[in-house]
Image 1 (cartoon, rainbow, N blue to C red):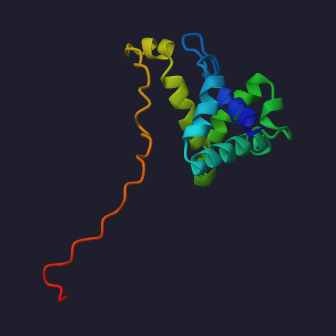
Image 2 (cartoon, one colour):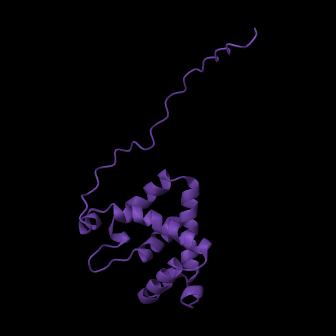
Image 3 (cartoon, one colour):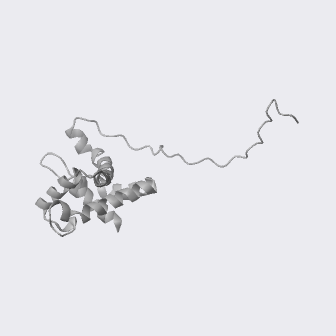
Length: 149
């Protein structure tokens, strides 16, 4: 359920433009389950909290008492711009967590990279989190040379 809120917030924060695809066009539906699985629990919790904050604050940014996912596109764009630049550090940082996760998906898209004259990313070798080796028996430490037996 929270993934839907995160997806909706990301789509609003990274909308499609005339020359660039939006985050929703960049494989977001495949990215989010993987991000949730691979990210530390506190990171995922922060992204979810930021997405919920995004959806619950239009009253304070565009003065409409509706959640962000019910706003018309024009108001949603204004809300996204205002909430991203709020002077309240805690709120801005929570929204930044959502934008950080979105940027990893959006920035890896071949169409986005081509627009900025960057080569496509290579296939992920999945080596950043290697499997832990089987526990080897731990030998007793050698006695210190100055220790008295």
